[in-house]
Length: 467
Image (cartoon, rainbow, N blue to C red; front, side):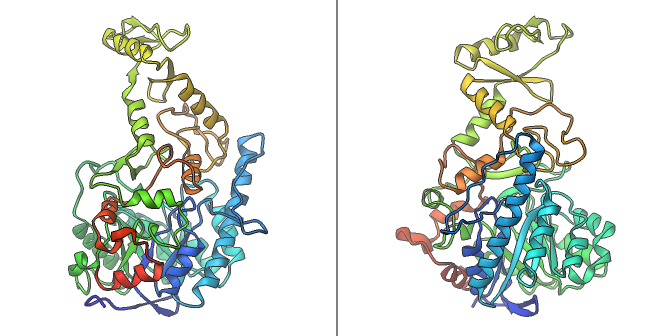
C-alpha cells in the first residue's frame, strides 16, 4: 500500500480514493466501471450516448430515422436514457455491493438535463453520485437533491467553482461529495481553459488546487470534502506531497486514460494496441471541437487533416475594400469574394492541388477542401442529430428555435460520428481518439511490457502500490 493513502467514506461505505474517469462516447461502460467499483474504488459510467443492447446482448448502434433535427434529437435523448440505464444496471450487478458507481454527464451535451433525469429516475439506489462538467451546470445540485444522489462538479479553477457555489451549490451543500479539479493542460477530452489562460503555457496544478481549496474553505466547506485531481495522474508516487497535505485537505485521484488499457475496457483492440505506441507529445490540445471548448486528443491523420484544413484558410470581403482588391476566381463558382492578391495566389495553388471547393466559415474566411471532403462535411451537417446543446459545426441549438444563428463551421467536425465510430471498431486514423497527455506512459511503464493487459483489479492493485 502506498504510504499515506487511506480509504475515504463515500456513499455510506469506505472506498479507495481512486476514481475511474467516465469517458464518453462508449469508452467507459458497465464492464470497466463495475469492475473498478468491485476493486474498491469509484467506477464511473459515461452517460453520454451510452450503448444499449438487444436481446442477444449485442450493441444497438444508434441509427436515426427522423426527418428533422428536432426529431433526431428526440431519438438521441431516448437512446441516451435507455443506454445509460442499461449500463448502470449491469455495472451495479458487477460491483456486487462494493465500491461505488457514479455516472458522468457533459452539461454541454444535447438534452443533458433530460438524459440525467431520465437515468436517475430508473436507477434509484444504484447510482451514488453524478460528475458533471463541460459547461457551467448550475442545476446539477437541484437535480441531485430531487433524486437523492451526490453531485461532484468538474471544474478547472477556483473561480469557476466559486461561481457555481454562489449561484446554486450553496443551497445543497450536504450532497456535494467532492469537487473534481480537471487540469486543462493534462486531462484528455474536453478541457476547461478560460480566455485568460494560455493553452501553450501549462500551469503547475498544485497552486491551482491549493487556490481551489482556499476558495472552498472561504465558503465554509470542510476539508473532508475531497478534491479529486484529474488529468496527468499515472503513478501515485509522483503525487506523494499531495497526500496527507494540510494545505490541500482530503485528496482523491481520477484515472481516465490508464483504464483504457484493461481487459474490461470496451474500446476496440486496435485502439488498445495503439495506446502503447503514443510518443511523448503525441496528444494535442486543440480547438477544433464543435463545442467551442479546447480538447485533447491523440495526434492522428484525422486531427492532422483538421489542422491542414484550417491552414488552407483566407479572409474575404463581399465588396472590394482595403487590401481585398483581388476577385477570387477559384473554389467559389461565380460568387464574388474579394481577397488580397497574396491570398489569391495561395487559393490558386490549393485549387491546383485538388482543394477546389471553398467553404465559408462564421469568421468571414474561406477554407479550401477537396470535393470529397466537402461532400462529407455537408452530409454530416445535414445529418446532425443534436448531440450538443450548441454545435459550432452544424449551428444546432437544443432549445428555443434550434439554431445558434451562426454559419455552420466547416473547420470543425461531427463529434458524435467520430466518437461513435472509433468506439465501435472503425478506423483509428479517421476518427477522434481522446486521451490524456500522459498517455505516452503506456509505452514506458514496465507494467505493460511484453504486451501485458491487466484486468481492472490488477490495475487498481498496481496503482495502490504507488506504481
